[in-house]
Image 1 (cartoon, rainbow, N blue to C red):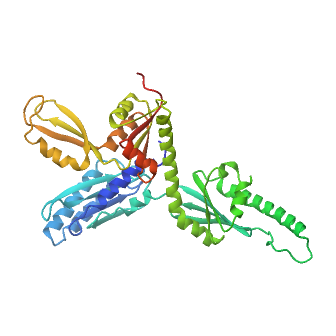
Image 2 (tube, rainbow, N blue to C red; image 1 turned 180 degrees about the horizontal axis):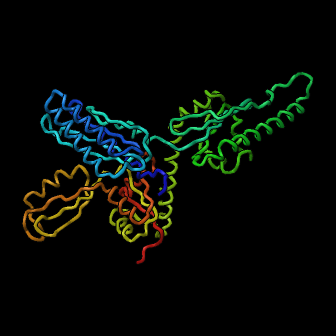
Image 3 (cartoon, rainbow, N blue to C red; image 1 turned 90 degrees about the vertical axis):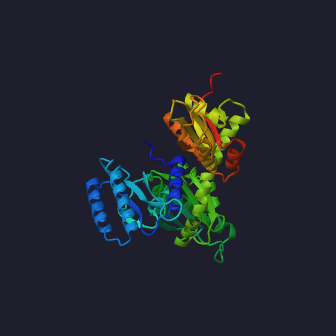
Length: 419
């Protein structure tokens, strides 16, 4: 199983956390439980029993009942696991008002963390504590930073929110103004030679610091003036590092302050990287469409058919796809039907089934058996056939094109479908 965080995993986590953030309880009735890997289930169950006993001291009858009910539900969910999964376990549970006071219903959410969680937490509050999972949405990849000018260079490594200054070197290159008595040409030649040696040293130190990093995603260059561009033009960096330069930005400083300037702008830089990736993916799809190669398709029905045939190499889904796949069953016979509709139309559609006769047995017993987001529905099909899934944002021109011109659903195929 690849440890690479896919855009689909990120999308699912983001959506789940948005749902949880929208939930509010009365008083302190919502339970958040984080269990890190390595804990014993029995130990956590024992802690929950103690919390159940403590909750019996709550004065409000309603709050006491809701908290104890939530603890029971969490305990039941916990007992379904023989051991804590390798990334840990996060459970949210509580009485959520549905329609004003007295309409509370216990809701339970189990979120599989995408990476091992470090925190062991039990908390009762009026909201769910999702902040420890929110951290996983932030960029965790490793980036190298070199900030330089003609006098000095500073190296740093940025991983998620952790920044480490690795090394600082000085150049020994004299300023552009020569001492009296030296010829201008001779001075300039000496300065150029020292600058070349300095560039070589910058490259050697960069190779030593960054090449051993197994998951280096990119290199960001910074510094005042044009020296950083002169350095990049030469062959001073190892070719693998040179290929990883993702941004070059102007900073006022070349020490820790210069690195901080780069870090301050890194969210914008790193977001742009994902946009570049998305643009590249979409341009690959548009190339196949534009050249009529037969290696691309779009639209729900065509893509679904290609997924079932196992010929899809990459499935492209728009993040703005707010559509559900609804399964309607008849409880009196074996009639079943599937429909795709906008999310907001689902309540009216359910209402319209009341009293409507089944097309097969003519008895008015039609019900919505399942309603699944179309992204999840198609992504599950893709996962069954080892297809890559890319969730494309709507924040680029190409992303907007996927949503508006291709209905938010497209695919790049492994080979042409047989006619």
